[in-house]
Length: 376
Image (cartoon, rainbow, N blue to C red; front, side, top):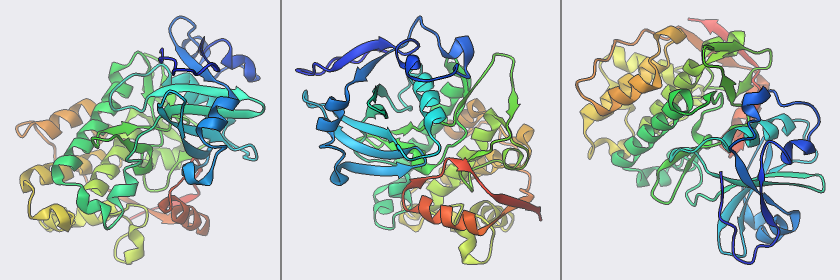
């Protein structure tokens, strides 16, 4: 990938990602030859001086957010281009593997619903990834804010749902790599100036081979409330893990309510359980955010709720592919199976409670989630 050099920017050069950058790290890439393809991917290598100047020495006023990786800052290059700088925390015990993973992976991806990579900075002990700056920040800043949520019409919400779905189709099927994101959630969906969604944060993503359908890990990463049952319990993940996360997102976008804090109402363990009850009682209209209820096509919204429930079914084989999801979203006549009842609920530990509070304040939880699952 090539990015045009900014005017008067002398400390930015284009390099093959598979050569110079990987010399900065010890050990081979887990992606092997395919992940380190030297034939195609180029990116911009920024000097530390350029990034310091662009971010005003990482001023607090330029801080956009914080996650397990570190802080994200807004910057402005001499040529006027605005950037987002994802800075690996120097005192973090995690993040280096995620840094290498994201840098190796996202540079190979190009889609209108994926965040665009400009380059990176690896100098003086600093490791940073440079992205396009998206002025509307993340979806969770809108959908879970009582005031901003009212700015999202149903047309805009459907556009966001559809865009996320198309981005996942590209990751799962249409890109030359087959990729499972593994941490899809509202804070990892960024919004451009026209409110088009762009999936971000590929530090936890994994590449699948052509004949590979699933994989297993002893290190369960992700965020409480978005992880599929088979992944949380057994460490088993596949493209259907992303489908589950997408289903949770759909229900959150329609309702304006978080799945992972829904238990605080004391009536249901999570949003998914609540939606299932509403469906069985023919009360699904009650799920819809009141700010869009009166001025939106109910049939289309109810169709999206049905698709969301299909995506969060317990068994991976019961969930549709993202290609089927796009078809069901866009076509009234597309067949939609009856969702099966979700049988598992999440019960959190005190550690989870603290992490969920952090996540609701803009933090990204990209590490082991301590969860206990019980059958209902």
